[in-house]
Length: 559
Image 1 (cartoon, helix red, strand yellow):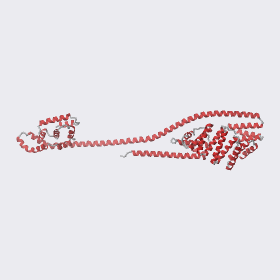
Image 2 (tube, rainbow, N blue to C red):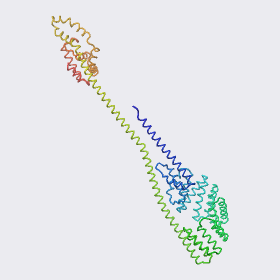
Image 3 (spheres, rainbow, N blue to C red):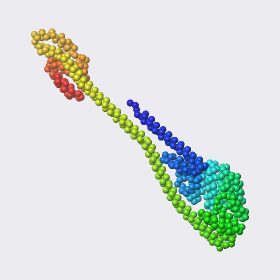
Image 4 (cartoon, rainbow, N blue to C red):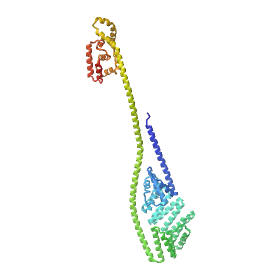
C-alpha cells in the first residue's frame, strides 16, 4: 500500500508555494504602485492624490508599506495645497521611520510632520521637526528637500517675529535651490529672500534680490515672479523714502501685471500716494483694500496704513483712535493666539492619545487576523491529514477484520476436515490392530487348554511372537497417535515428564485400542498387574500440574 505522507507533503508544499508566490506578487505590485505615486507627487500631484486615495491599506501589508502609504498620502495632500492640521495620518510614518527604513523617508516623514504642525499653528514643534529633517537632508546631500525644509523654517520664524532666523533660513533655502538648478524653485527662494531682507530693513540687499528676481523671471518668461519682484522693488523704494519712484513702480505693476491687486499692494500704493499728497487716491485704495481683507493680519495692515495716512494728513485725532484700535487688536490677537495655542495643545494631546490607542488596537486586530490566518493555514491541513489517517486506519482495520473472518472460516473448515480425517485415521488404526487384538484374546482364553492350544498355537504363535519381539517401539507407534490425536504423546511427555518409559508404552497400547489381555501378552505381565499399573498412572497424571491433564484422564478413562 502506498504511503500518503508523500502526497500530503507535496500538497502542503504546493499550497505554500502558491501562497508565497501570491504574497510576493502582491507585494511587488504594491512596491511598483508606491514608487509610481512617489514619482507623480512631484510631477502630477493631482493624479498622485487620486491614486493614493484609491490604494487602501490591507491586513497583509507590511509595516513599511503602511508607513510609505501614510507618507505619500501626506505628501500628495501637501502638494495639492490641502492644509492638514492633524498628525494622525503622518504619525505612523514618523513612528516607523524613526527606527527603521531608509534615511530619505525618515527625512520626508519629519518634514511633512512639520508641515502639519505648521498648519495647526504649533510653531515650536514644527520648528523642531524641520530642524531634524534638515539634518537628515544634509547627511543625504538632498538639495531639493533641503530647500523646502529651510523655506518652511523661514516662514515659521516669520510667524514668530524671529526676523533674524527668517533671514538665515531664507538664505539657506536660496543656496539649496540654487544648487538644484531648478529655475522655478530659484525664483521662489529669491523672492522669499528679498522679503526677508525687506522685513529686516536691509534695503540694499532686498533691492538686489528683487532686481535679480525681475531679471531671472523675464528670462524665464515667468510673469508671476516678474510682478512679485517689481512690487517688492517698489516696497523697497517706499521703505527708502523714495515715494515718487515707488509710486511709479506701483503704477507699472498696476498697468503691466495681469494678476489681481492684493491687499499688500493696495495699502503700499495708498501710502505712496499719500506721501506725494494724493490723499483721495490713497483713500480709494484703502477702501478697496479694506473690502478685500480676508484675515486679521490683513486687517491689522489696513488699520496701520490708515494710521500712517491720517498722520500724514495731520488728522492726529483719527490717527490716535486708529492707533489705539491697532494696539487693542494686537493685544486681542496675541491673547487669542495664546488661548488658541493652549486649546490646540490640549486638543492635540487627547487626539494623539486617542489616535495612539486606536492605532494600537488596530495593530492588535491585524496581528490577531494574521495569526488566525496563519494558524488556520496550518491547522486545516493538519485536520485534513488526521481525517485522512483515521479513514485509512479504519479501512485497514476493516480489511484486517475481513482477513481474520476469512482465516477463521478457513480454520474452521480445516479443523472440521482434520477432525474427519483424524476420526477416519483412528478407525483405520483400530481396524488395523483389531484382528491382532482378537487373536491375542483367543490365545489368552485358550492358553490353559492343550487341545485348543494345539489348534491355534501354530496360527498365532508366529504373529504374537513377532509383535512381542518388536514391542512396537516409540518411534513406530507414538507418531501414529500424535498424527490422529493432536500430538497427545508429545504433550504427555512434556507436561508429565515423571513417568517411566514403560508407562508411556502402556498409554500407547491403551490409546491404540488394545485390551488388557492383549497388552498383558505384549508386556508379559498379568492382567491384574496391568490394572494396578494403569490406576497408578492415572493418579500420577491427576496430581500433576499438566495443563491438559483433564484431557489425558478423559481419554484414558475410556479405555
